[in-house]
Length: 450
Image (cartoon, rainbow, N blue to C red; front, side, top):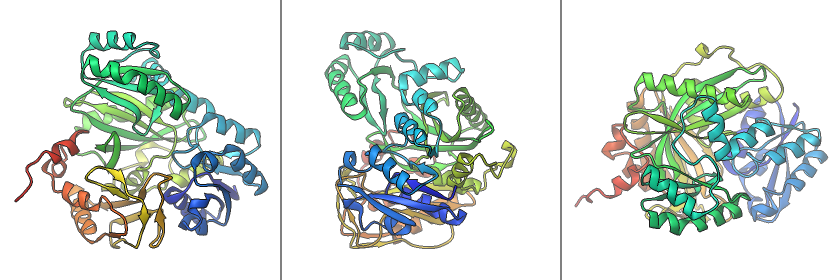
């Protein structure tokens, strides 16, 4: 491949451009009117205005993206994550135009994009799944009947959902009945699919995921696990790899299940198999993300790999730098903090101009940023400013570097979650590596120091 189009924005566009530059591949960026001054626009070999700020007129505009790709005679399109990255119809349309898609096949995306269908696929493959309904629920009465049978709490989920959208915890029959219609409506509006289902709510839960990669020959490798349990509103804010406080026996079972899941759908390119785990280390399939994950850098840091390079090689039917699982070894510990422009007291977006944006430099520090000082965080997109990654020879060193970095990270002009991070990494549950998806709630219930 000599030239690719990046159908995304911000830090992931910059991240893809960096690897393409190293490989001698030209890049074509598309950008909205709101993103005209963003770094990725300047970093790309070429850049095209795609439309106004709203995503349906810009980054979700399949026709405009494919038109520009044809004009630029690109060899492939990289979708990044979010937007069109898991849109099977988009994959079919670009392939019909004679352009490669840097990701799995449309058939694989279809199989794993629908949570009900993917649960069924995983059960057939022998991968454990959370007890839940086998098909979409038509009425609230069906939902209540099933939930009463398995016991509360339960999760009510949109089958086509993702990113924490279209899911709600229901503690009682009354809550389930109240939320049912609203979740179906939201699912229809967000995902074009109003199918919903109920599954048992696992608590206390850890959110553990395994990075997998399928090469062009059909081999599947894993790059170990990530702990993504620090969440607010079902969305991750801190991730680390490898996961602390897990037995090696459980880790090996996770790797085996993840590879098994990927092989069951003939997986090719980068993907992530997500699991939910209880206090006794029983784990269940949650979903498979058929794309690069936001948190992929920590897997790269502990394995010394470049997953974007692997994606490009695979899309070109080229061999990976490895040919056997034994060649992948853990070389330390890494932690990622998602730096957001947000009011961290309420976890609400805080758009505005970045008057100051300064990141410390040093050993074990990696910054994947989508913004430069003077840019504005607009209300149109996710307000993540950057991914702040620290690594060390072990978790102790990584935490020490995280503390020093966060103390010297300077963001002004918008509210940010830096202060929250500085405080949270002192929380005993996090320091000890024994935390779950309710850790932020428990942290905030602690008595304030006088």
